[in-house]
Length: 627
Image 1: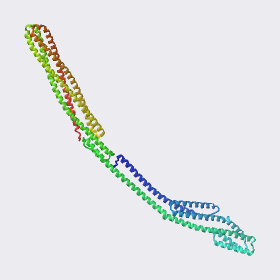
Image 2: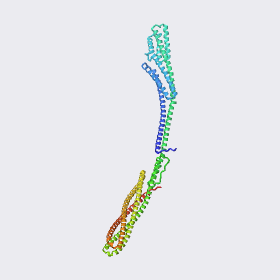
Image 3: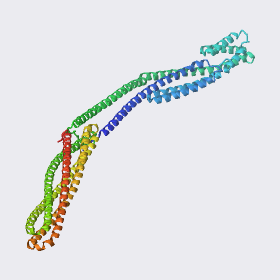
C-alpha cells in the first residue's frame, strides 16, 4: 500500500522531525551535561571530602596545643571542642557514605571510632588533670603546694637537704611529669621518713608535715601516672588517626579524585562528541531534505512557468506532467492547469466551430437575400404590369362609357355600335382575364415573399442562438482567463473581443428581425390588397359578362336598348370606379415593393457587417493553437 503525503504534510513532518532532532540534541546535550555535572559533582564531593578530612585533622591536631595550654579559665572550652570534633567526625562519615566508595566509607568509620575513643580519653585526661590541678592553685597541686609550704620553714640540718631535694624534684616532676624527678622525690621523701623514724618525730609537726607531703605527693603521683598512661594511649590513638587519615588521603588522591577527574574529563569529551555528532547529523539531514525539496519545487515551478509562457503565446497543446501522488499540491496544480488549458482549448474550438457555422449561416443568408432580391424584382415587374393593365382597363371603360352615350344619341348606329361594343367587351374580358392572372401571379409572389420572410426570421433566430452561445462561450473564456491570472490576460482580451462581436451580432440580427418584421407586415398588406384585387377582377369579369349579354340582347332586340342603356351606363360607371380602385391599389403595391427593396438592401448591408465581424472573430481565434 502506497503512502502519499502533500507538501503541507511533508513540511509539517520535516518540522516535526527537526523538532525531534533538536529535542534529541537537547536531550543528548542534557545527558552529557548531566553526566559532566555528575562527574564534576562527584569530583567536587571528593574534593570537599578531602577538605573535610584536612579540616578534621586540623581540629584534631589543635586539641594537642589546647590541652597543653589548658587553664582553669579555658577548661570549659575544651569539652566543647571535643563535642565539635565528634560532630565533625559524624559529618565526615556521612560525607564518606555520600561518595559511594566502600573503602573510604569504612576508613571514615574507623577514623570516627578512633576519634571517639580519643575524645573519651581526652575527657578522662581532662578529669584527671582537673583533679591534679590545671594551675598551682587548684586540685592536688594546691594540696601538694600547701604541704610543701609546711616543709619549707624546717631548717633542721638533718632533714633539710632531703626537704630541699624533695621540694625541688616535686616541682620539676609536676612541671615535666618526668618519672626521674618522681623517683628522686620519692627517694628524698623516703630519706625524710627514715630520719623521722630515726628521730621519732612522727607525732610532731615536722613528722606530720613530712607525712602530709608524702601523702599529697603520692596522690599527685598516682594522678600523674594515670595522666601519663592516658597520654600514651592518646599518642597511640593519634598515630593511628594520622595513619588512617594519611591512608585515606592517599586513597582519595590516587583513587577517587583521580577517578572522578578522569570521569569528568571523559564526560566532557563524550558531551563534546555527542553534541558535535548530533549537530552534524541534524545539519546533514536538514541540508539534504531542504536541497531535495528545493530542487523539486524549482523543477515544478519551471514546468509551470514554461507552460504558462506557451499558453500566453497562444499554444494550448502543452500539458504539465502529473505524478502518482494525488495529495501533492503541485500534482493537483498540474492536473487543474491541464484541465483549465483543455477547457480553454475546447472553448476556442467551440468558438472556431461557431465561427464556421456562422460563416455557413452567412452564406445561407446571402443566398436567401439574393432570392429575396429576385422575388422582389419579379414582384416589382408584375406590379408595374398590373398597373399598366389597370390603366388600360380604365381607358377601355371610359371609352365604353363614351360609346354608351353615343348609343343614346344615335340609335341608328346602335347595331354597329353594339357589334363594336361586343368586340370591345371581348377585349375587356380578355384584359380582365389577363389582369386576374397577373393579380394571381402577384399574389403567389407575395406568398413566396412571405415564406422567404419567415425563413429569414428563422435564420435570424439561429444567428441569435449562435450569438448567445458565442457570448456564453466568451463569458466562460473570460472566467477561465480570470482563474488563470496574469497568464490568461491575453485570452481575456480575446474573450472580450468575442463577446463584443457577439453583442454586435445580436444588435445586427435585432435590426434585421425588425426590418423583416416590417417587411412581413407590408407583405401581408400587399397580400390583402391582392386579395381585394382578385375580388374586384372577378367582379369586373362578371360585370363584363353581363355587358356581353346586354350587347347580345341589343343585337337581338334594339327596342330594349333604350331601357337597358341606363343599366349599362351604371355598370360601366361601377367598372370604372373599381378599375380606378385597382389602379390605386397597384400604385400602393408598387410603393410597398420599393420599400421592400430598401429593406432588402438594408438587410444586405447588415449581412455584410456580420461577415466582417465573423472574419474578425476568425482572425482572433486563429491566434490559438489547439489539438
